[in-house]
Image (cartoon, rainbow, N blue to C red; front, side, top):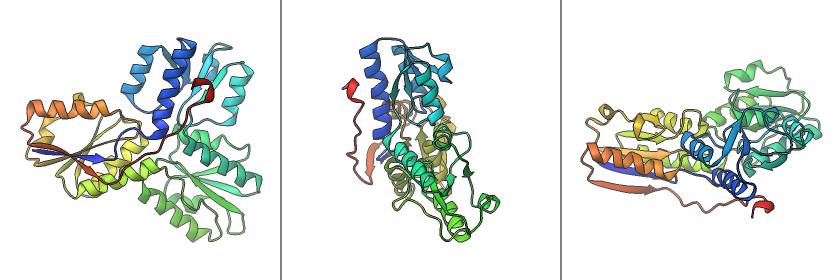
Length: 307
């Protein structure tokens, strides 16, 4: 069997920045530091940071007054900020700059009097953060069919923003439905989907033309990892989402000549290597090679106090 690796895969700049913020905060301030929600959606990453002294909580009222609190890469609403400030907590914001860019758009549209439609998945932490950027109502839509249920008219001034980790096809289908119903709707010129989401999806699309099966390394609550698995399936390739080698069912690999492997933007590369090693122990692997779709060289700086 040949293993072909999608490239790019794994950590994006926003995830790398968020993890680095927790690590540097532990170095500077000592354990414990508190993190609201999972810093990124990956079990292995969260477990390692717990071992280093990070304490993960659901809300700021679970954090002692004056303690260091880190907001996750998914971003938070302004009420969360206000609650932490009221408790005199030392705030470090690990929100991805591309998520913060969507926050800025939401506030701008609201300030200019537009009604805002948010394209995203209900309950996802990033979506909750977007919804919390303005005091007024924001309308969440998750499917093209849901556009017809929006309590808006063609005469309203409307703008849309999107969750950054949707699939390209999913987001475009909803945008097309919005533009059909509301021809005057405004939206971002270059779109809100993050570069890592689109790049990893492009790499999987290319990989799917070469392989018999696809493994995506990533946690079940990772939106972008799920989109990669769904993309593989949509192209007719059996696709599975796994946290690591322990999730592999080797029956899946029977008869597979070319196995594709990718990983979500919050999955560390050592898990991909562990998956490959586990397969090599059970199956004869003739070659492991990269399928390079594009190179990434983006990085985001961490807060000045941690540099």
